[in-house]
Amino acid sequence: MTQAKDDAPPTLVAARERLAADRADALARAAALRSGFDGIVVANALAAIDGEHAHEGGSTDF
Image (cartoon, rainbow, N blue to C red; front, side, top):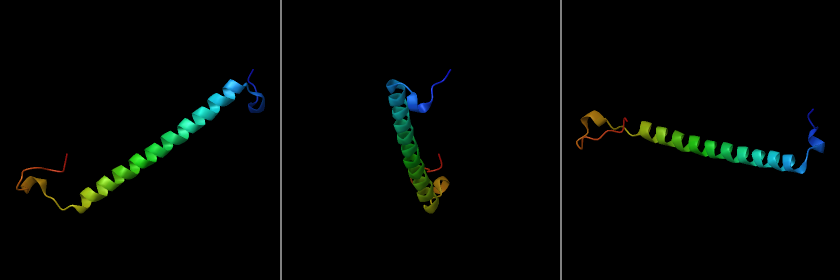
């Protein structure tokens, strides 16, 4: 039998609060990483570098 949320033991309440905080932190980090990745993609798209014919031989296509 499961307990209702209101009468859950204090350790269970604390665990739920900790998990909610950790989840919020993970979602915030994922959003920041996604934003950073999107910025890299945009910057790379704006750079008109043809790596195949670059004088220094490097490529940004990897």
